Amino acid sequence: MRLPRWLRGEDAAAWLERGARSEAQGDLADAVQCYQRAFALDPDSFEAARALAFGWARLGDVNHAEHFAAAALKLDATSVPLQLLRGDLLREQGRLEDALAACEEAVRLAPDLPQARNNFGNALRDIGRTPEAIAQFRAGLALDRTLPELHFNLALSLQLAGELDEAEAHYRSAAELKQDFAQAWLNLASLCEQRDDVQGALDAYRNAIRSAPDEVAAHVNYAQHLLRLGRFDEGWKEYEWRWRLPEMAAWAPRFDKPQWEGGELAGETVLVYAEQGFGDAIHFARYVPLIARRGGKPAFRCPAPLKALFARAPGMGRVFDEREPPPPFDLCCPLLSLPRLFGTRLDNVPADVPYVHADPDKVRQWQGSLASQPALHVGLAWTTDSKIAQFKTMPLDALAPLGRIPGVVLHSLQTGAAAAEADRPPSGMALVNDGSRLRDFSDTAALIANLDLVISIDTAVVHVAGALAKPIWTLLAEPADWRWLVERDDSPWYPTMRLFRRARGMPWNDLIQQVAKALNEWRNGRGGEI
Image (cartoon, rainbow, N blue to C red; front, side, top):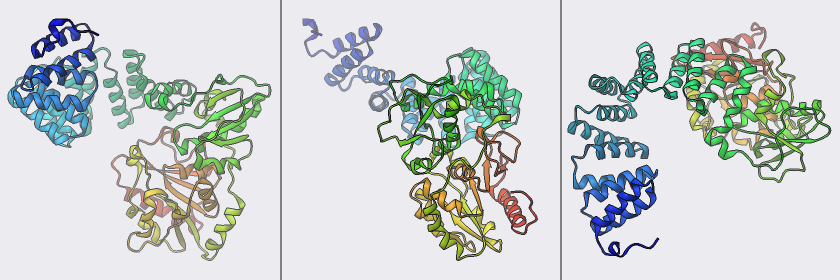
């Protein structure tokens, strides 16, 4: 775009004026370029730096926005809007202590501004100073009780502090003040689940969907709650919303063939592609052979570490990994849509195990080393590399009581970064580090095939053992994943599985005492069923 003559000079004020006009017309990118030019011409221009801070923030460039917010505040540190903006930007950058300082300065400058109290409370909660955060949100509400964000943030902080009744009241206030505040209903649903209030959670999820029908998280969380309750007919349908989650939509493979919707087939090949984690792939791989019952031929795309395991499983068709080109196919289908297409209910879960088999050659390789130690051989897994699932992991020390049971040899099934922990077990706990020898899930299956029992937190290991029909004790941290349902110590998915549930607030050591007692009884032949 050619500039008019009067703007071709080196006039910072003129560039600021043109930027303001562009911003008013909705052309924010052009406005930021103009503000950039103005600031280059006059680095002491507070207005240019301020405009750049807010402009870059609106464009989603956090780093540039924070840079210019800091520059503007050097020119005028009394700007409350800029202190608040910079606090938000610093939080997004993870610079929590700096964010706290900016928000605290905003409160010092404007103690009667509710938004300043709100932002300061958020910054305090970020660094774990929840009681002080609660005090700030209360101070903000004393100034203005009509701000839904203040009610929401107070509720969130109260929930973290265990004050669930008052938290519920403020979530409801937030939702009443802002009709499309789906997140308030979603948090209330989480609170209800925390209190084991099944109906309250259902109502909250439905209210979230009513308030924002296109809110993807509301549908996905509602689906998982329905599935957790065993209401599979509704749950599988709602679970199709998962493909609208940004992370799922970005990952989804693009095939130029239509998706199979469960109809009868006449010899067509259906390419089923695994999704989400290793455990999900193992759990739901049982459905792939069922495609033949509808008259089709399956092909199965899975992560590379699972390929050798599934290649030996009957009825899988051509198994290939994500790095390989697919074979010719006519239709495609994501793996976790198959339960819906096959009409899975609690009373008809396909639980014929085993549906995977260990490689006999690999099984024999392990037999020699285990046969030399006549004992009850028990495999252990206690942690996961997944950063989003750390709440369900436990320290190896917690498992030490299992090592004190006579006649039991413990084998580590840990792979990845945690495998080395098995070389340094707690004092008095003998642990064989077999995990360091496992290269893929075919190796894991061969080792498990030689064990008498596996005891593990909720990781892919439990699915391997369950799919092999080996005795498996799964240690669950509440809230447990939806697939384990509620208030059960067995699983309809795996007939050889026993569930040990760690109640909220229960130390892992207390749960392991229960497991140790059960293991000792089983070893002595007094425990009955696994």
